[in-house]
Image 1 (cartoon, rainbow, N blue to C red):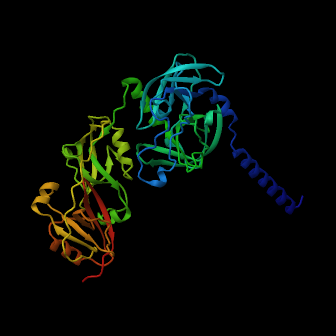
Image 2: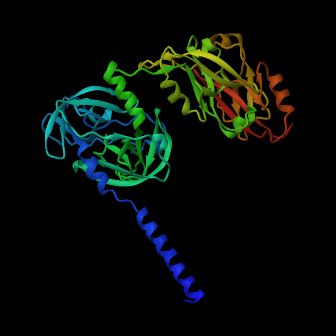
Image 3: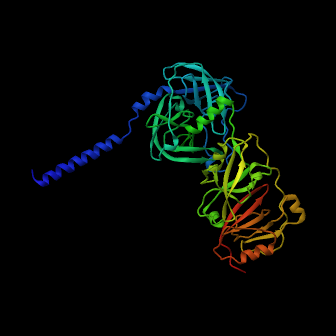
Length: 472
């Protein structure tokens, strides 16, 4: 056999081996469905129509997100129908004696909950507990020797990994859909306590509360939400990581409620420009806008303009990380947090408080002072010093009120805003006079990046300014 023929045979074998390997990599979900399908249930509920049966959307300011960013509860009362509504969802069995996990919104307000198995058995269920903040609910049926799911570790999930959903979209029981993990740790509007798993698995109304499986047949999440402009699947689905859900169900089972930590700060994201202004090496952490008086953070010495970079040994890479980390901390625990303050890091000890469900009104917004006829500065705005009466009303010791905003304004501020501090290259300067501000601005280059701490009503925020107008 000559050498060229040997080379041809080897190449053919190599190509065949690669093709075979690629063929083996194609997913086969049949075994997973056979083994785990029996642990997934269909959930239907009924409730008296005490009010409008239309689902209420959360209070979201972003109009694009508001449009059909919704839960999946199909309610179909119909005109002149019976005085009750029915909704469909999914769930899965986590213990052989009848405990089932689902979404809180699936069973919310239900007078009766019916659980249906793949073998057509049906049971009445009762709610053990539900947590709206994470959208997790634990329900119980009276049965034994039930098939249960296995749990996986969401931390081991990789973006691009295959995942499978089993549920009852539009009431079609035990429907199987598959896709990949699109992203991890997603933050959604008004969902501060869940690092969602984003997938492109086809999820539709009725899939809510159903399990998300990895290819090992382990539950890694609970399908909870979609983003859609049509009300149906558009390739963006979100699941609650199963470790979060299991922690919630343990608390619901043991105590009937969920306890979360709080420290009493208002925060915002650290952008690249803010990081530059504060002298931080890169955008990371949670920037503290304000500290609630008497709160754990206040007692620990946390200050507005601090950037929290670590909490209880856990890195805070973005502002959305902090609520989750603090919320998962046991109330009363004494922990250490690290902050970036005036160009240097420091550690503070803090005793974590408990998050209450009630909301506290921010109160009325003070009337903005009348504009004064003053020249605009290099920010393109006109400011004046606070009067003694204004300082008393606003409870401020210092600050400059914005009285006019010119067309070429560099700062995103409004009339009535109060400028509290100016930050540049990690240096924080309290603003006390118009002359002082103009002197500070006059010493900066035209392309300087600065940050202003702005008080608007009862809230404070940090506003980045990229570049100044030419010197006068």
